[in-house]
Length: 300
Image (cartoon, rainbow, N blue to C red; front, side):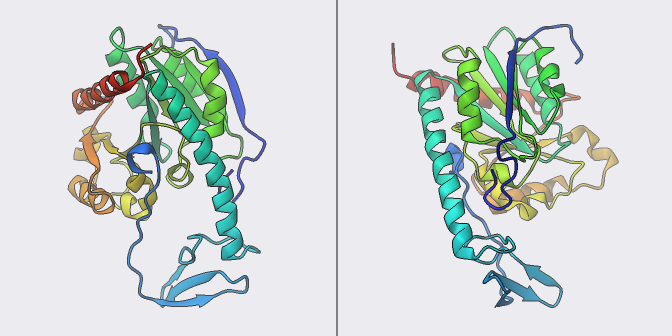
């Protein structure tokens, strides 16, 4: 459920774990959001429901109040309370997930992006490159269908599908209910492909070690400034589909500069599932994180 729209309440479906089968076709570093806001010196006003807005000659900003959002019929105080209640419960569940994953030396990543960024293709390339070296499993989040999970299973890696219905993100409780079904191996890699959305997934900690934001060059280079919470919450940004740069009017350096303006600690990797560019650097980062997770896991 989103903090504003209440999306997807009661509509989540978690499918059975599909085992991998080859031959088919198929908080910063802890996941917590750090707010980042552009400066806005326009005059502040209020609307009938006590929601403050900032206004200028060509600009209405409904994210100016304490809740940083607007919902008709709800005051800012009501929205702040709802957000605290929802996120407080989610964070407590996420902490439980994180403790369980750490106890088993499992390195969990939350892959977030807008739709069409190439998350699944990059995930497939990653799993194929890791095959035989690192045990892995995938949680797939989509509003409907099992298409992406089937693409993952075609690599030989088990994947569990979570369908969120009208919901626009995964939450910690969904992941908590998925984990016991997955038969995860101690010291393995868990990749969570979130619902395509650059807004709500930023606020919901799943218990992952890191959020990884994927920005494709077929999008605007100003995405990090338009959706700053997501890039502030991420540890890594994969600038994806860079093989298409010769055919696009996309300023890659400007996109990176914008992302670093939001989050100066962000690690940026240029990547392409088509050519394999950046894959070695991405895999090395994963293996380093997995090694650290295994080293810090309690010894049996």
